[in-house]
Image 1 (cartoon, rainbow, N blue to C red):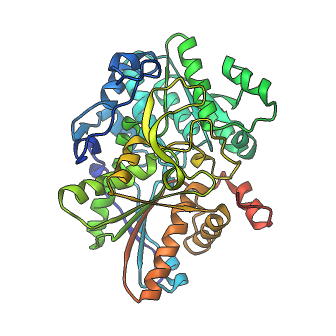
Image 2 (tube, rainbow, N blue to C red; image 1 turned 90 degrees about the vertical axis):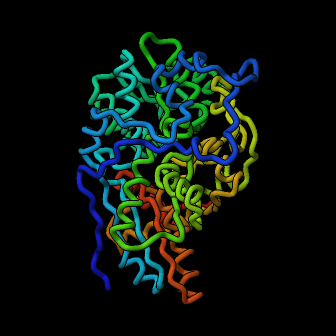
Image 3 (tube, rainbow, N blue to C red; image 1 turned 180 degrees about the vertical axis):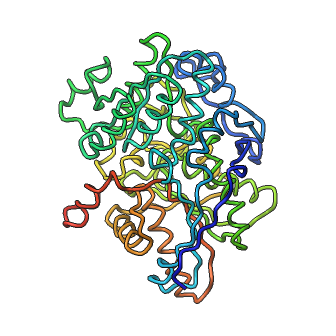
Length: 435
């Protein structure tokens, strides 16, 4: 069988609630700490950078959080997203495994990030915010927030990690098309950025530095709030529409996954697919194998320490309990810019600590080899970040072939790679190196 199989939901199947894993953890998640006092941070301390409604979501204990109709209305631009079975990839691998992927690249911005950018822009608009400041790695988040801000009439100011600003000009152009202002980070726009440039004029930048710049921008401009595309609880919460839809679609397929796989940078797309399945793992004792896949060059889950650390380089954020390589870690200039973060979502970190998930790391040549195979069999050029998940899927499918055993594998194809083709060219011309 080589015909594509697509499991499509209807508009009324878009979830009406976000799922909050905090409600189901068998051990409570350690609270964020104030960067000065090192004591649990009170909610009001976060109001300098976030609107009150998102602060409440960040600390919400409820299992289910209603999705506003205004947000669901915009979700209909691309949701529900398709679940497809990768039958041509299965055939190429000669595997008895059934491989399914949830395809988030059909969104207007080309990735899963709009699931939270639309929600965050809405809640900021309701709270009276006029302007949002943010950082972006590969540009998926920056472009998603630029679109959401345009839809809700907000200004958008983006600090884009310099190496990605240079490697991925079309993502920058996409942000400009949707009306955002974009700066290469470290930039000359902030005191911290100027300091970094003084210390190293050729600094390639990092998400930690860009976060510091965005937060400084937030606290020094009126009517401005900070918006983050990953890591925090409310961001992971908004992404759970992915997993909720996937559960319905796997039921349509008449199968249940043995393995559920997604890439991990800050944790949002991994959380989006897997948290609803972790809910079933905890409450229904399902035996899913759930795997987060990260780059070997920035391996927070597989090589990091679980401890309190800052989310940014300038030590302005609350301290978060997470797997971290250290907030001063400067990641190599790999082509998966969305995965170049020193830490991991506290909720994802907690799930790993509790044994609810596993983690794997891959070098980027192996990742791009898997991305090329997927493009040549399924037709979709995957974002380099998503290609990490594909590398793990290929290994899992090969193991199934060697064991002569059927496995059902589900993964999140969280974005397309049409604006990452220069990275593919680097691989195809033999210029890509592992770090």
